[in-house]
Image (cartoon, rainbow, N blue to C red; front, side, top):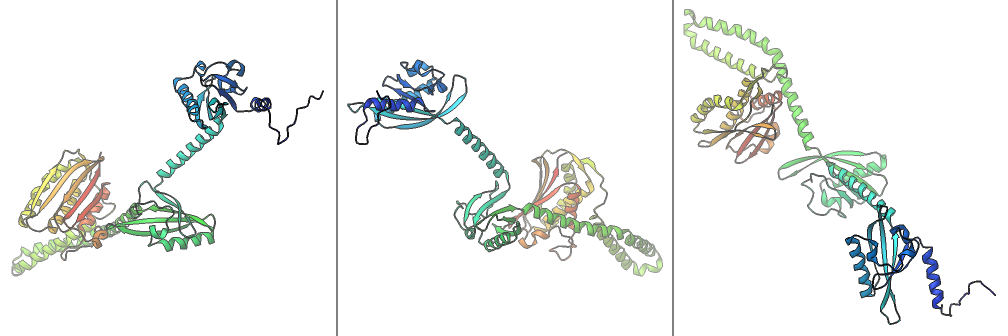
Length: 480
């Protein structure tokens, strides 16, 4: 008797017993769990792999119902719903879910549910194949965490990044957390850099060629103006091949402003130090001359020249005041720091300023909020207030008002002096703190330069807003 398996030809139909034998052979050796349910959600068949998921041997599972497994309400309803969908629709479906094994480990699986039709064409059973995708899911979760961390890093970078092809088309990009206002508010992907940065597109492509040729990162700077605000930017280009490159754009406006402030202060200090070094040498002979002139004015022999002598004394005093202004710019000028309240200082200066305002048919008002005392050189801060306030009064027309405010904002004590003049012209904005810059014929142009220097030595900051309706200077002191 020949016991070898019988082979069937292609033309000969495979009998049912052979199909059952082949199914069991495949199912019993499958690494995937395979289950067959009837309409009562009873286990009709389960292969050995089911033990990995349920912890129950396949032979002990057959004949029990899905509800007998002690599943949570969520998992039971999930399986009941999906199986019934197949019975009703006669269509296969698949889904993914997680599952807590008997060992309390989380397992992820992909379930494929296939209808098995009976002789009458109705669904008799639903065959379920469960594939363990735990490793795949963990890899996906790990990849997502890495992507999230990378995105967090990218979002924290103060740069805008572009990936472009050699024709200048944007393949991908990452906007800065502070979006540049000169980028159009649209999706930039697949657009050409000429549409995004038309003024520097040719420069970008030039530096791309340089990056490819030299195999080094290329640096360049550019500036652009939006709504009367000038933005300074730095561009970096690196190319790993000849087909695409990375463009990094960083806003360096604050750095440029800081450099301008440092340059301005260096000029102030240079003038001040020169003045301090020669001021005393000039003052000594001037003091001698002034003394003799005062003595001559009292002698009868000079009575006919008394008015001329007094004029010379006045001119010497004016020259002495100019020298004092120069010396006040000195970097190493000593400060006498004592605790004072800015409101008290303003109140003491107010009668003097109001006198100036009344003469010019102008008004001064104050809005002084409660602020703490802080260390200051009261003489220098008084000079700063007088200089800025008088500049404001001089910029105003009659019957207008100057407002002096104090308040606390973001851990700073703020002195705000607002005038109702015509504002500062755009071409003068960068020159305000420059020594000897003035728009007035009879002034030296040291007033604001001295104010900036006083603020710097008090570790304060001066900023301003200007428009055709007036200018507001803000002096911001650090809270003690």
